[in-house]
Length: 443
Image (tube, rainbow, N blue to C red; front, side, top):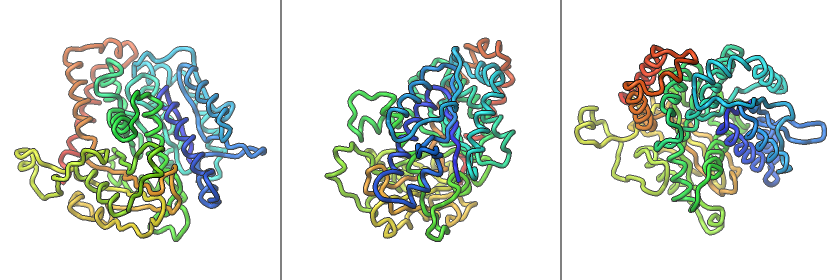
């Protein structure tokens, strides 16, 4: 089964390009016929000349990034984008969610829907749709939300995963918190699951683990693509009977998003290191999984700086608020292991009921996928996709900053002129605050 990717705005198109690069390189690495066939079928279709063409639609309101992405893909010689699978205009959305959602989205609805429909019809069987976008600007967030709404209308029973890139806390765009609140509030009603990467976290990985001195958006996007690829490439599920899973998005959603109030997914991957260090490093599954489990509990996205003092406990909310000590409680976790001796890996530490909410049995809350095929040059690689309290703090910070601006009515007129009222803002605030509250009170 195949996934159609919809790349939206500058960030969505740049991350999407890096993702297809990783997927193609990994699928074509070495003599791995069954794995390669499954991976290629999932993300590419082949022309009569044997060329791999990404199952992707590229959308932006300015042509520059799309042209760059298509040119880079064609030059790499391994894969390319479809020649008519993109749409752009000459004028952007001005970092305004309302402009993207109320003006550009509706204006170009027919052509975008036609592009997606064409890609869907190329699939023998559709596994789902993945929309990739930033929440900071206007096109990724506003047009991205509108396009997701259209996809939900056209494909009501198809799995839709939204991948969101969260802006730097210090600010890329003055109104990024408004755009983020509006995006998330609307997507929560439309998407089956929302997978979030925070730029601040990925930036730290680039600096502290990969030893990159001058970090670019390209470096950040490569880390995001590595983590996404480690989730999406073929793997064996517990009940797959030795056959690679057929529907990765459906299996991901079923494993992690079992309640409509809880759709936010975060990712940790171990190890992450410069390619020059890989040949001199050895890793054991027990050590990697011990570290990854503590990263989950202490809500740390890197091996460096893990707080080993945090332990799962049955402490009440009141006790935790008084002492300040709490752990990252999970609703559900999916552990994906790839590489050498993978079937010897003992995952019992993630089945501990203390990690999870009391109203879902741990055997239902935890799932694992495995593949003996090494991923992206790592001999062993473990990725944890978690539906947990991990995103409560960044969400809380974002809503707090947006409220402060809204209280002084800063920039509100820029949204009102495109048809977004103060009532729309208040509805979105209420929606996100409910999500935050639900996650805070997991027990």
